[in-house]
Length: 153
Image (cartoon, rainbow, N blue to C red; front, side, top):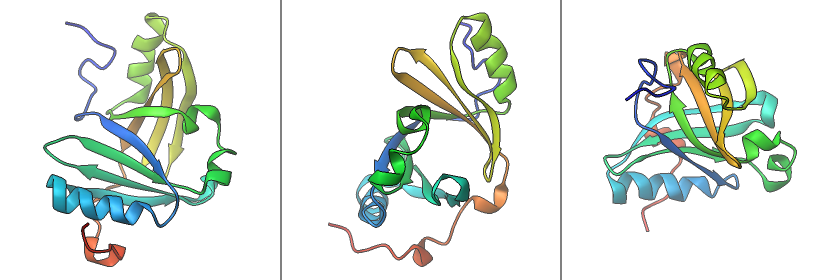
């Protein structure tokens, strides 16, 4: 079966969740302790109100967590506010070539960022996929003890 991701997808999808700053810490702690998760990456994107992005992996599923104040989230482009799922790919442009051929709207051109690059497309009305090229290895495998996580509950 052919997909727009043929030969370009790196791993399983990540569910996108949003939290107010500070509230994400309990989620991360519980994800680690209760769902067998690990923290894959942790970074901030300065140009988007220094929002925090934390990648979590578990045999039960992956999460791309964004911590940003509600008033700042409302100022983000709609395609960022409404992202549902993220896929890590080796080439956003290659996926975009297949998406264009399939008539899938591209909402965000390939945009370089601290992680490498990102882009977004809409595979159905209101369902937005983020594509990420994760090339900045220094963001991966952060010191979880330094994150200031609370106890599980």
